[in-house]
Amino acid sequence: GANFRRDKGGSVTLVIRPARPGDAPEAALLLEAAYAPWRARLADLPDVASGVDTEIARGPAWIAEADGRLAGIAIAEARDGIMHLANLAVAPDAGGRGIGSALVRAVEAATARRGISKMRLATHALMEGNVDFYERLGWRETGRDGNKVLMARHLPSADEGG
Image (cartoon, rainbow, N blue to C red; front, side):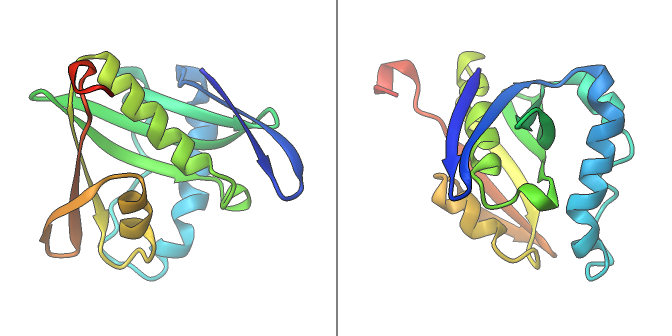
């Protein structure tokens, strides 16, 4: 589906769509760029870009295009009746425009359409702002494991009015 947002600089067209295998090379570059500032400071940050072609092929994964160019990616994995948000990244020059939030909402909507009501993710404790970002979107912290912050979101089912 397409989402349209306005930013301070005028109108921006934001399209969220399923990722395709051909998106993998550009998506890997976006992931490297998005995580580069963190990689310099966090020695235990896992490699986020290698294997993105396999993750896109396995799916589900979504691409955000802003003004016709790749601006973000979300990669998830359904396992044991739970949708795991494995990766979320926005291009460094596209931050603060609602792209990350739009991607999370797209993943949540697709998860609900699959009949899955539980979502989980893990983020790095030292990546400032991440926990607050997810909490603003309705996620809650469920625990910590070393530098990992574990978070969950319960999606309302159709019979709960959501």
